[in-house]
Image (tube, rainbow, N blue to C red):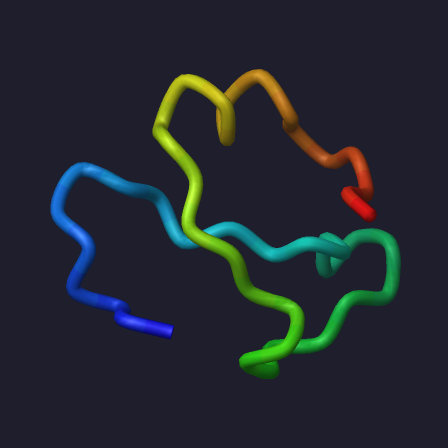
Length: 44
């Protein structure tokens, strides 16, 4: 994953609060609006 994506948020697919781990397979780039709307929900 290119972590230098300008304007994107790096999001955890499974949040820490739901047992998600800080590993690359648990990361995704999202537009800020989408990430803020998602909150602590789990994505598939």
